[in-house]
Image (tube, rainbow, N blue to C red):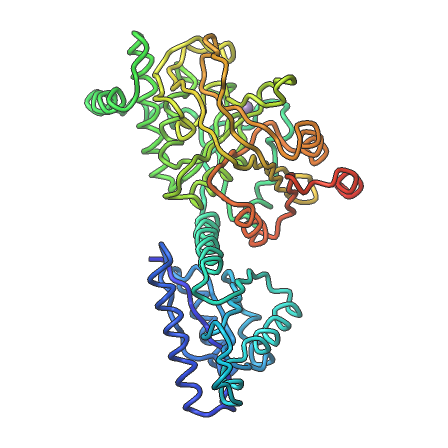
Length: 476
Ligand code: MN
């Protein structure tokens, strides 16, 4: 279980009795959090009353792999110079909990003892000063600890830092290189590993082909049986379906072997394979493996990270490509050659086989379905040479009202905020890719937290867009 250290600041000035109360209140708050937060355990540390104690606690947090973050609260005044040595060493995400043990002021009984004990209104400001002075990235949760907005903020932070930990150890398998001559899918992999933690390495398609050859007929049959229960088989070309199942099983084994949670490939490098992986890739996406086409490892990894952040939530997240516009309805039709995540499915996906007009391989099997609806974001991560930029475009997935009987791939359709033209213009000016991660599962606050942890430039395009300001400031 992932853990968070709960640090409570104080000092010896108040005497043992007050410190005992501080300790008890910290325990009370932590147990409330433990009863209401998912996927994490809050651990109350020794009180932070000396420089030595703080340094020891932060060292422990740094080197305990189960500790995903540190939360700190100044119940009383805790002089911040004694935090400097510890905070200099801090390597874990930090949340400053600006709360009180009491929700309201006890007007009839309040005295100076109460004032001295319950003074986060000034103790937390001393703490925040040193965090600001030391340029320490942090989130701040403000309010009574039982308030739903405080719990929501902390749960979001927990989900984000779990994804951040995952990101720091994310391995990406890249079969082949980038699609020839394409610019936006390129990027600095060394910088990505430094900034984002992503380790992206190439593997020969031949290594995968040899794994495909090892897949046994019984494995293929069992998977085929399971798929026909889950999806509608809408083809007589069982060979093409089984070929995809072999790719799926082989890639799954390959990724387990290399501890990889994201991958990319390209239709220009499929030596020894009969088909471009379509159904195979869709099944892996459904299992939380990040993917993007044409060698786009950045989008593949971002896909995996956002799926991790959203684990267990309603909605969908997946790799997407802007394909074509309806200027009349002012919306975008998104799809890919084959690889659209079944997490977007509104209708039961059909397994179909159609020719692929690109790549010169056999007709590949794929899942075809209509897309889901809901508010969300399209996220694009680009490398500008000087730095990475994350772009978050607010979108609304809408129902595809007219049928598209000749479209042999899954698709989704979305509207852009604040308006079609301003949204598209801002995306174009920001340099956003044709590839994105579309998600209906994360909030803007969570996207901001993630960008803050990576120290990434984040461009948000939503209803608050001020076009003339945007045009003036972007790329300056
Ligand atoms: Mn593409």
